[in-house]
Length: 457
Image 1: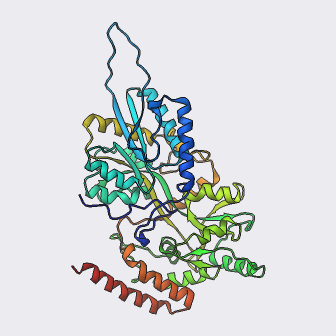
Image 2: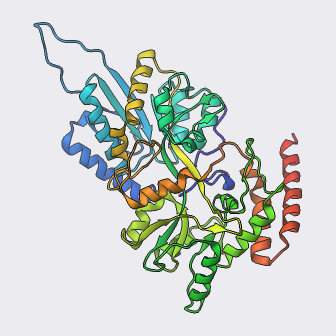
Image 3: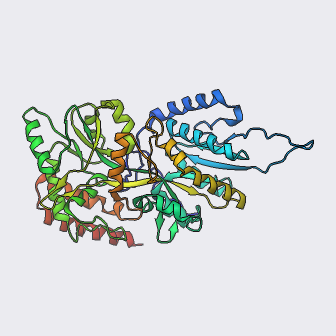
């Protein structure tokens, strides 16, 4: 079986890193504290359940089962009710697991015949463990994972095309940008369960109001410079810088996932990055800007929505805001960030009865009741993909608005290939003052050489 090449480590950092060999996704709460949280989760669940109902501990191969309550005996003969076990594999943190536990409890009120086996894996282990489980014939019923996994999993026949199962009501209820992360052509390889992406955070104690445009940002930078302060430490890695091209009023990718900056908009984009770079310190694909924001050294940071809890802890819930993107240039096009999703995948190879039970549960998972549990700001704090879910938390509400108007993350693209030449062009223009047109042409030549070498046997 061909190995998944794209994102086995996708979830380790706070946003997708396809540019650095698709290095891992979403650090957020899913790092060192995640192990502590899972131990707390196990203790919490153990307090109210029998040993057979507890969640699997990290690294365990065995799956724990939520055993249904005993059914009443209506006659002198034992009642026999057929049961199905829905096995779900995920890498969720403590609050997300608590939300899933609550959803399962609610679901089993009306479906006591259904059992659940929840298997936890770390973000790094989940995908390779899943592929191994398929090879050994012990695959789960449902896999929860990032949208970038979908195309490869579908091509290898590891997950099902859900198009024949989808009803028009669910299709119309989910935001259009979420579908870009779950489908290719007529193939619906997953259901988008949570919106994720890059947004502009602000510390209200350092900047009382959002900026309307990039020009106003420059003025604030001049004022802060007099106080030896900077408004932002900007990460110009491609996962942040590429979607900012929206400020030039141009599309970033064509339908085939190919970059358009060599054809149009590239010079404007590099000039925009030069202006933004003048606002403060520039780095490339590091956490330095994030750390400066958390320590109160800068007023703004562009970061993943999954950093919400850490940023609240660092600057305080009343001080943290998600701003609308400022506009750029005379045409006043807003900057934008990438949007992707966490998907629910229905695994191939299940029995007909297990498939039916799993699909019924997935439909419930997208119900207003279940989505309300997952979007609880004091719990899982998911940004829902469904339009019927009402958000009351300001951070989640503004994040949802920004993500729904974001740039869909390309499920197939040349981002790995273009990383080196494009980053070289950004560094030459922003840090060394090179001519944008010359830097673009040089990057295009380097890219053609890389394409040629990649095709050479």
